Amino acid sequence: MNSHYGIYGGQYVAETLMAPLAEIERAYEEAKNDPAFREEFRGILREYVGRETPLTEARRLSEHLGGARIALKREDLNHTGAHKVNNTIGQALLARRMGKRRLIAETGAGMHGVATATVAALFGMPCEIYMGAIDVERQSPNVERMKMLGAAVHAVSEGSATLKDAMNEAIRDWVADPDGTFYVIGTVAGPHPYPAMVRDFQSVIGAEARRQCLEKFGRLPDQAIACVGGGSNAMGLFAGFIDDSEVKLVGVEAGGRGLASGEHAASINGGRLGVLHGAKTMLLQTDSGQIVDTYSVSAGLDYPGVGPEHCQLHDTGRAEYTVIEDAEAIAAFDALCRFEGIIPALESSHALAEAIRRAPGLPRDSVLLVNLSGRGDKDMENVMRWKRENPPPAK
Image (cartoon, rainbow, N blue to C red; front, side, top):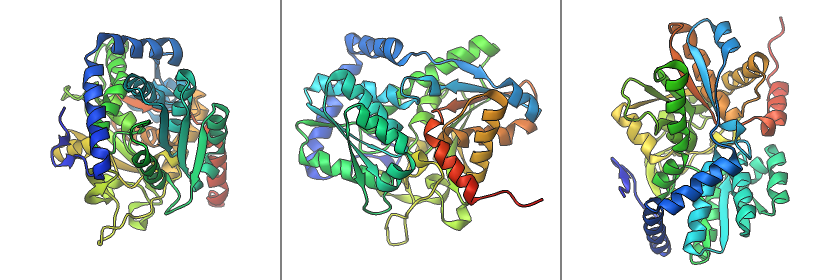
């Protein structure tokens, strides 16, 4: 298995984790070539998660915009409400195969934490979740869901008290007990083999979407658009179209209050090369190499790095990476609610906002495929708070 994506990726970890990473790589190579493992994975996705998820054309929104047709890959309809469960099932099956006794995870918006707690309950394994204290406050419904599912939730108050710091604490936990613990990383970041493994488990999104587009439209989409924090939902979608040069791949980063403000989480558009959480990647850092505090209205995109494969896709030009600011994401959130009766996650709203930006300038027979990576129940209080703090100008 290739451990690098061009100059990105690798294993920049403490010596104590080199053996556990090698163990995971060996176990995963065996598992993915085992028909019984693949069939159990597919069976749980089908019978427990509810896959495949539908492809929904946003007809009223498309008509309102007056341009391209917008189609939504409905990962919000998965059990637990997001794409995260695809990956947690795969990693939990691998952990059980390896004889690990305990699952740990980091989480930002809480959806990966909920998905990890869910599979831990399903497989009867103890589970501990690390979450930034700020995210615990702004995503309290998901915290309660994790606890209800039997997981212990640790609020991390160090640093910026967001996803980066939660991942730091999860890694410390793993270092303390690598023999009995399996660290379920939630995105395509971290040391090899996690970026490849998470992409593979999430590739079900792109495989389904590719076939569904051919069935529904008689052709592939013109563009496949997904939000990018660490980037797992985007890599899952892109995997279905990576070899189709006629399909433009578009990743959408969190612009927060704007790149010029410094208050954002756009690692590719606003970062530089460095090492974070065990991999070489693009990240937000100072001239002296200190990690910069990030900001986004969306907790799940509030991360100072990005998966190494995304960096390679950017450098080679295979994918384009754009920036959507908070206000645009909130407007897209409102638009999907009002025109389609679908409440999207704030993370997904960034991808939707990019489609809304592009659609009017494209022919009416163009197709923009948007990965609706999660539902927005968890974000309602956050959206209302943002609107109170950012009232529209008086007329």
